[in-house]
Image (cartoon, rainbow, N blue to C red; front, top):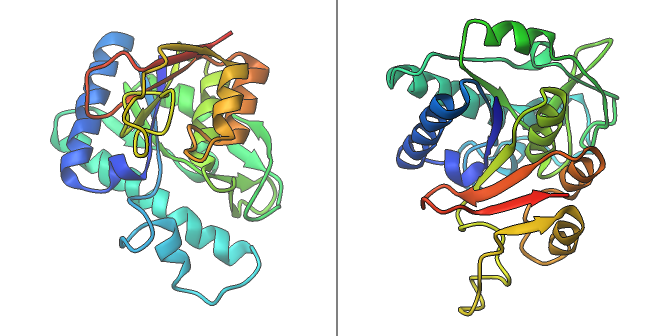
Length: 243
């Protein structure tokens, strides 16, 4: 099985989500089972992005209320994607909250993952080849309150699942062909880096264009989780990150 992670750009409209569905269908054919992690749709100003949702309430320190509201963006994405997957004949379902198995402390806004319980996921895979989970979030053990994992936390969600589910690879779909030698928006003479080590990825994280969340990259390096950073729009090999 593999884990696929789709960000806000991939989820922002019907045409992009159709590309997501095609990627998922190919993954099911090749790997039999796929866990899909999604971010909230779009960016600030678009209706369901996390920043837009947070603008609905007064500015305040991170709390139960802000994390619950923040979590809604990914829940919306997951719900919409599963509905569209079913419409396209993909046997799929959504898991969220306690059923998704990510248990955190109560540091709202930047929670740490205390444990991961994959029991419900593994049980669900017996009946569904595709499970969609909202990224960026977990629940506290005692109260089952929603918590969030910091900006870019859906990346961490994907890598953590990749480790605990022993996935063949964790795929990140982007609007670029993969990790580039420089920022393609400011430099026309860029090349795709086809393979890189975790240490080389760490250097890229410190550049202005974030490849993946730093916490996610650190977790992948610590646990040897294979990563594949590739384009949503092009059939290119992308960038493989490994030891």
